[in-house]
Length: 159
Image (cartoon, rainbow, N blue to C red; front, side, top):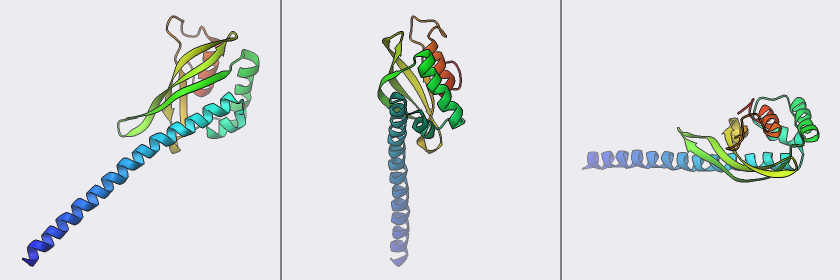
């Protein structure tokens, strides 16, 4: 009888431990997706407010902060790039992590708002990595200099 009770206690402890690890893992995953979304929104807000120094600190891509800040400022001043708004920033769980996502952005092109979709990737610490604007359908790749300039700085090149 004692042996059976001991075996039952070991099985219950093992199942309880497994359940605790599983719950902690799931909660951590849910939290990481929210963290990636919040950090991406903070980055986009800094760009929208033209706080490029702050944006550079929030960005998870491989950049030299001073060069990136200067180039982003030039993109705004010389090419007229403006991030007017962002919405639906969403981190997506795939292949065991929140590594990618999507966002809707509104940028200014020739003085008019243009709604675009962006593909996101997340870097270490749930920071925004690449934020790549997709050229809208009906427009040729490379035909919108504001998008090309943004993708050079925040996407690692053209997209």
